[in-house]
Length: 344
Image (tube, rainbow, N blue to C red; front, top):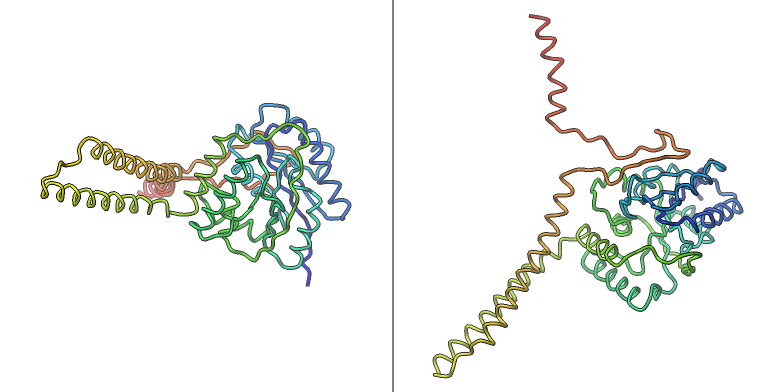
């Protein structure tokens, strides 16, 4: 029995897409209207310094199915995705990029797979060799590492996905962490999923907005948020250093007992370099996890909204309000003291 789709939400994070966002919105609307799928389009501007939000706002004023958010500054694609997921109201939610490299023509097939019973529909690149000579190799290596270390399937994964409403609720309500890795968390949930292959389209305008530093930060965030196995590397490095020290100690004692000259400067320098490198790598790995703990305990919201178009407070739940136990306790005690004083 097929599920009834009352509303499909399409979430599109955008950054510096002033030239192309109009074509993207038009392509999505054309495909969904052609299939007669009821939809809303949630476009999240991640603090673009150009006229991206002005362009989105003008589109939203002409079509109330287009809803728009502008974040106060650039919080990153992961935060923009989460803002869109929290604002989405559909029975199923699609996330896709704003540069038309995720083809809107695949949306009907995604909806058909959802109606057939899939909770998650993954868009998978037909050709993984996209993104330059080093880009696709590094991306594939990163996905394979996370798949092996985290115990999840991330081969050729992308942010082009359809999620059932129940999966969206789990992500935005029951996963309160701030350092999020969207495609990893979706795979981690383990809900029934299918894969649909798509050909990556060419960008209609401009070049990639991603910078090497952002990609490295995303890779580190994904690794740290999904697995603690890198911490075990510290133990492995310690054991390896201990083994090396034992071998060198045996070699030194053997040379001394046989009257041979004990290895000198070269051996000492190499040993110090190996031990020093192991210590620095270990401190770096531990530091990454401590930094993530620090970010989590501050409990800052993952994003802040500056402007909204076609949004209502009911439709946009946003981050939960945080209060400290001391404040809550004080608020509860004050009326009690007041009643006691009046009674006395």
